[in-house]
Amino acid sequence: MNIQKLNDSPFARWTVLFIVATAMMMGYFVNDVMSPLETLLEMPRSQGGLGWTPSDYGFFSGAGSFINVFLLMLFFSGLILDKMGIRFTGTLACSLMVIGTLIKLYAVTTDFGTTDVTFFNTHLPASAAWASFGFAIFGVGYEMTGITVSKAMVRWFTGHELALAMGLQLAMARFGTAAALSISAPIARHYTLSTPLLVALAFLIIGLLAFLVFCVMDRRLDQFTVYSLQFTDDYSEASEGHASKSTVNCKPSTVNKDSDEFRWSFWLITLFCVLFYSAVSPFLKFSTKLMVMKYGVDPDVAGFFSSIAPFGTILMTPLFGLVYDRYGKGVTLVITGALMLTAVHFGFSLPMHSSTAAITLMVILSIGYSLAPAALWPCVPKIIPLKCLGTAYSMIFFIQNFGRAIIPMFVGKANETDPTYETSMLIFGFTALGAALTALVLWHVDRRQHYGLQLPNIRK
Image (tube, rainbow, N blue to C red):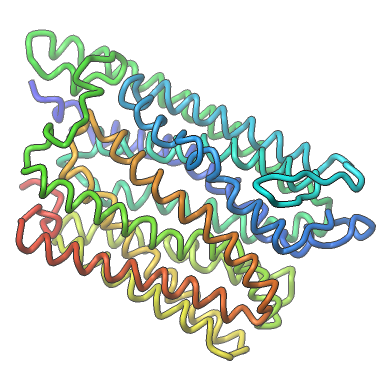
């Protein structure tokens, strides 16, 4: 019996999608819950803020990637996932997100006086240092959740609507981002600076409980797998509840392709990820203040301008995923999305101050932000076997975190020296352009080597 027979039930696999995507959505909400609060964080304590500078906020924004990058935790997360399985790793990840958020809440609610902390040759207020530490702990769980959910999607949807499933999972995650950008600032202004974090903590607990429900379902399916495959050789691929030696033998030689082809495709996808997401995720953390300072948007509604991008992806990402499932052209979709993102950032760098122009650019960004990920992530399982997929995703996310850690620091410094935001938008623009060029190379390699990245995902 083939393992794919276990996920032939549409009810089972779509229920699993909803449960694990809920956990991911809560993580995305918390990841951006402080993004609209930059102007409040930079206000003096006498006015309800924490007295941070733009550089302090830039350091905090990049801190979510510190442990993942500098202590190699994201790489080890992939090994843990492939060795210990989806259930253990996902529960650990959700728990780390809760712990990190508790530390951030402590940082925001505690009066540290004028105490400063020196970290990486950077002087920070104690509140910023503690918040950065909490965000770093949260970041470990956040990225670990991402690779765990991705592997769960591949396990349950390979041979079925994989791109659509990943698109729906991304859409729910982006809904979390959009909600954070939309409601965080109004809540903080009408209550206290710590209230959005209390809401975020409650959402994370809901996400943890949702993942525990998935664990129960997955264990039952695992028991069915053991019964059905006890006389076959497929058990090591099928069961996530038991480790086998094969689950950690993740060298390129295990791929059913020539190793040079594997390296080309895998590393091109990895390079694209680090450039593309470095031009999106850090931008969203600065976009609320951009709307206020450059386009004169009221601070209470600026978050809604920023949320146009993630809200737009909620519908479009699954739609583009369905297109890829049925008609293929995955790399073409990726290239188009990166080029649209490039045009948006260069547009933001122009000396235009119309709120209409800002809305138009955010709408275009939402389309590009939907196109590329909808086709990108389903490409990875076409070259990586399931038993090594956690390690592969962790390597991609690990390198991607370099950009997410470094870009916010450069942008924070650039905004101090150039408050017009033209310099920082050029940084994002050239980063997106690099992603588009990388995708063009991937398209050329795929045409020569026939990886199948342009082929539909649904098996006929």
